[in-house]
Image (cartoon, rainbow, N blue to C red; front, side):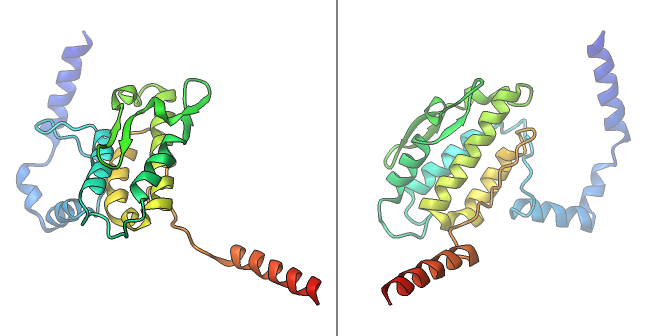
Length: 201
């Protein structure tokens, strides 16, 4: 049936693959170094160490909460603010937008973040689960950008990218924009000042 044909195809592909010695070429070594240094964020499945990328997302947030050196930030209640943000967020759900609490089991500054990643296990073949997974990454990116923006360029970007590559058609920006007071904000502020001083004169 289909199974022996798949095995034959796999055997043919493995036979056609370049020998393992080619991995010691300078290009392959450079790629391996970039991969381990975080230069290539694509998720690679390792059957000897299986992992669910969304569990890694929750572990990263939990580590940020518990390890005071993970986030160089003043103690201003940012952990509670982050949890409040994601608990009040909405994500795509079964034919409607719904509370993110469908996927959040726990979020608090002492216990960390626990996601119900089992609800996302079919995201590769179920479009609605894919949308939920994508919205979860967007929500966490948004909440981090508001409560712990310092972690986005490093730790979060790599962890989010690993999960992102397991979600089809996901348009999350793992390097979510941090608050900037740019030209549009300046123009509004200038207009307010002009109106205030113009009216008071």
